[in-house]
Image: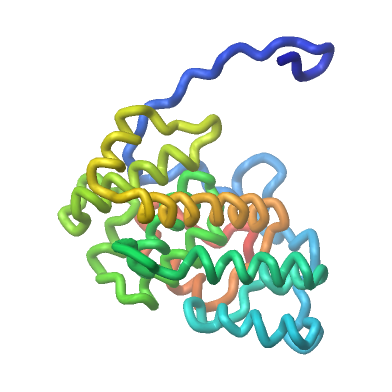
Length: 236
């Protein structure tokens, strides 16, 4: 298939090998070209009272896992049908029907967000993991999960898959796939992949729009993510 300017053909892209998360992380988001401290969100988040009444009732869901209605949701709420669909998807993805727990789903979201470089979602997922019972040891070592004794082999396989799936171009290899399938059933893999895909959407949204971080996730990020070089950057 031809693509790009002038119809040039793009050759095959080699899959990238899996690389464990290491500290420090990539260059801070706030220091990347075109993204500086003091950056304001592209779209103003609505105040809670401004959200369409029926939708306002539906998005109260987010106060459970996060303690607040996130600014990302307040921004999407400018178009209620999109916000309503996103909220329903979020609820469905985060429901647990098998062995993947609410705490672990948010740690999967963290690894996905780490690879994508979205500091907004990194802070939200580490806060969500904490609120769903993650131990201090897991919160402090998820960024280096392969070397951590606080994750099972099955969990490491899922997090390795999340890491590779979040890479662009996609880094999932047959070895990573086999490792995942050796420890998780099909239904659980669907739930794992759904979390990765959900945060792919959120990572693109929040890093592009520049959603401002709320106080609770900022505190969680500062407490648990300092070894990765995390800071608020443009999300304040």
